[in-house]
Image (cartoon, rainbow, N blue to C red; front, side):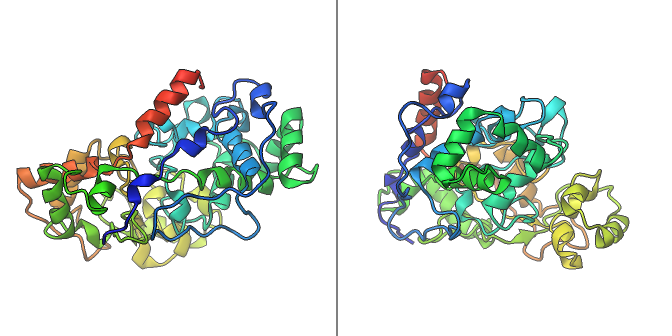
Length: 381
């Protein structure tokens, strides 16, 4: 597992083009017209390219349009919430909160995952209910506790009143018809450019044995061995994202929830997204999508890149720090009838837990702090 060149890719590309946080319509599309040519993802040698839908090829203009939409609060009912509200660059493209907060400070029931490297995931959301970034982008827009629009049609009608968006969609998609599918394609295109590989760990794997501290190097050995992290948080040269893209029940937030009653309701409920936000029902996890008993309480294995920036952890934000998260795994999760067979007590020493923490910190891309500083220097909000 020694991919060459992993340290060469940066996020500097996201600074090209229009302002990331537009504060007025002039900034949506600047006087410098966006290039309409193809946008090429710069990936390290050996890393497999993400699957990009044939009907949504990456172009410079589309990425720029998606970037503007991502940071525009006018996509919400009361102009207070954007995609970046819950997926903020300052927090590793998460939000630093236990659960997501939308319009009118309404709280959701799940932690906001990072949008970094999501182009490589097989499914989106903690329960995997969206198969693509395009489908994922549509969900929060009409969720009553997130961006709160009454319908996709209502949002499209709203955006059609903004001249710069009418011109922008015309330039990018070659048609005067602004649609929700076009909007989702643009946001997804931007998100597919948010890929990070420039971490101390990447340099270590590429051959620089001084890139990791002795503690982090011991953590890497534990990660692959005694701590058994790599069982689910898989890593290899072609797919270096520390996830198996599967769903597991590790016992998070399982106590005091009547799963039998919830499972019966889920079996007849057709609005999966709505059910996911009912009190207690969100803990059904992947079962909300598959209706398979084996998936009760199972959630997607998140990738670990930049994890030191995205606390709190777990699908419900129940673990406040890397320390408490590792302690949760060390004790073997929370026993329940659907506990994944791979979850068991680890018997880690205090030093071993600290070594794992040092490894996880070493997965942070060196590009992210400079990206945030550049945004702050430019006054983008």
